[in-house]
Image (cartoon, rainbow over all chains, first blue to last red; front, side):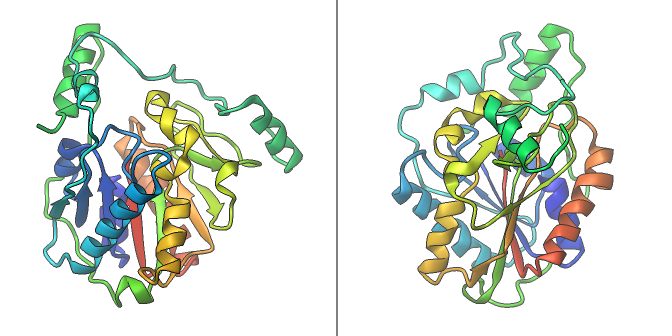
Length: 123
Length: 160
């Protein structure tokens, strides 16, 4: 994401990266960043929690308006709650949670393929 | 303590005998483009690296898929889907896409006057691509062109 942010910014589009992996974002040095200390997959807030999602987006947009130093990173104060996810996320056990590197479309639901075909895609 | 993903994943793959994943490490200060106007008066674009697609569109594949999807901002949230090489992070987004593709959240920000307008199309791509060269040469230029076509004033990039 940071590569894309820097490319956009260098070509005249102001960007803000909102993310939940502090080390990965920091390494990529995007122009503006907001860090939310939640498990990956929740950079825009907790599921089924519009109040939390609103708070995250409000804070991110406020930072976007205000940040004026290239490379600034704002850490949000939102707290996920239960800390059990950190152990799993930071585990160093020999384990690969990625999917096999398959080159065919990986539909979330089988019927998504039918919808794409009905929309005229050849898949 | 924040999770140290890069170190943890490096150790995991090393134990499996895999070559390390190479995250992008910046070697120069970031470029800078000031906002031309406050967000309350801006057309805001969105890019989410979550592998989001709309019902009727092609899903992403898992092997360095560098393509992007244009998802109309008027898409019902129930028609959002995801495909991503790290499906394990998408359990909650599949129940509530707003936690990684903040479609309804951004609509509320527009309604509240904090954002001028959303662009007609919002965008996604898939993270976890192994080739930085292909991100530079394929994904980043495609996103730039897409945002330019949408006449964005500013872009929110939600990382997964």
